Image 1 (cartoon, rainbow, N blue to C red):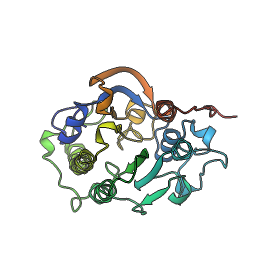
Image 2: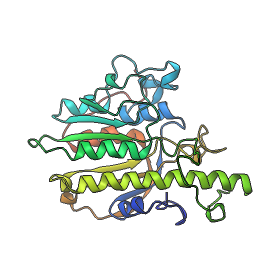
Image 3: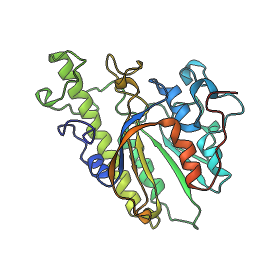
Image 4: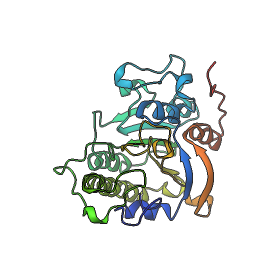
Length: 273
């Protein structure tokens, strides 16, 4: 996305969000693959400690005593919802959320945004705090032209570890098309959030589960495989100055940090029992 890379990447809404946020310059996933990364991100436990060492659709499941982020937040008084993509279990209803919206595989960004906007636009009842985990397919492969409009291949940035040729440029141009649609979806969700009465007291986090799906990136332990976008916009009521944050952070920091922010205690075994 453009707040981390070349300005030619078509993500203006994420760029605007980053300008209001903490942008973590060296953020990393716990694994370079979907399910292990997401499991670590949503439990605060490394993959071998929570059970998700492989892909959920290949029979890897959480250990029976593992608590997810919504499990932790429920006992702290939060309402929780999953909207769109998850990749922790073939059955999203077992992940601890009070509500699951838009059940289905490969949910594209604009469809997820429509569901998220509808959820955020419901009348606010009472003052209970809430968590909405909104998941989208982009920028996972494939990027077919019937779904996304590719950009001009001449305008894309080719990472140094990939060959700069016509095939690579066409592939990246297609990915940029999916990123443009992802960016539009993020913008629609942020607009819906801005219209809520509790917008000034809402923390927004935007991240990816692992590196981009190219050679020497996803599924490898190079930085391009485990490096992730991690943009966090603190509630306006906190009056935190937007800035870029150097130094390494990990998805494993997410659950303990959120629980601490809302007054809870996290004591799960990071490295296993």
